[in-house]
Length: 147
Image 1 (tube, rainbow, N blue to C red):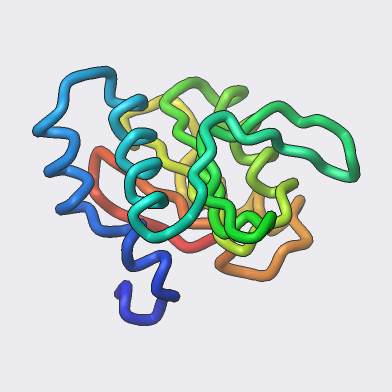
Image 2: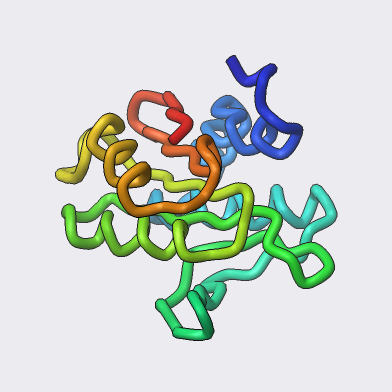
């Protein structure tokens, strides 16, 4: 299924590499995931920035966990959210507001938040971005959904 995705997404969706990194390092899962993607972005030649400022029409929206930046453009933005529905919506909103073609929301089906179908409906209702700009990753099931 990843063969139809751009080259960046093939790296992002390599669950084997992510699992290998998490199993070989110690720490909290959200931090390990962030650190894996931080290292991956640097290895791919991006400037990886933690807590990247998310702005929409010059309004500060908080920060996303990580962004890969290339020539002052956001190549990919990442949020990692295992919290409740309000926290999930906050992460989703920040990703929709950023000017990026590759947004990644990493969550777990074990968390108490929205299903992939519910998330897709929210994205289609509130985002003016093209379809499939957002990838929802379920870390517990090692699945991804294009939204």
